Image (cartoon, rainbow, N blue to C red):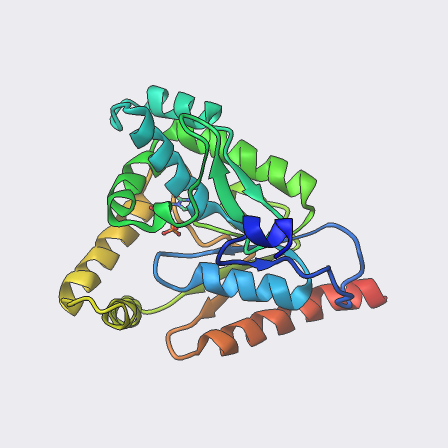
Length: 255
Ligand code: DC
């Protein structure tokens, strides 16, 4: 196995960027939307189809929560949490597809798997609501976009706050009942017992928290293309988005 392959455990090595009909100029595409709509999967697939890179900003909020927990700071102390995040040296390994996420402090570690565990699901909502943390991470998202200017960026606030000038903005939505049904299916597949109505309640609670947050709340950007995935498969959503992007940008490139 190559050195890169070893670094990408469980992930593929990034394929060389192929010709995609979209030229070579900078392109930022954003996908905003509530929890449980499959944003990350769809953003990753769309990026692959278009030969762009993929930025999972939710993973960065998760890594921020983990860094704060490892540093032992009180998660209610926003300034202390923000300091830990600022000093964490959080970075992606772009050689992998999807990129793996690392922190350097308080301990050097590949956090890609760890940030998906249950304790992080709980802590991250608190950390994502801290304005100072959001400032640090928004700055980081923009720095990443400078270094990787052909990007599909996914998160709650990418089109509305972080990249207001994005070339194409999507808002991905789905009925909360359908989102709960999908989540329950994933958990059942993982062998867990599930209470679908509790999952539905949790999704409604997360929607409220995301929309009522003072800084970077979940909103639908006025210039976003709204995609409702309630009745669509992942493949159909990616097809639809790809058509929108190619129509909007392909014509500019050709013309
Ligand atoms: O998409 P996710 O579940 O991995 O996101 C983790 C948490 O981070 C979730 O509470 C929403 C929050 N988040 C955010 O506030 N802003 C973003 N751009 C991305 C995620």
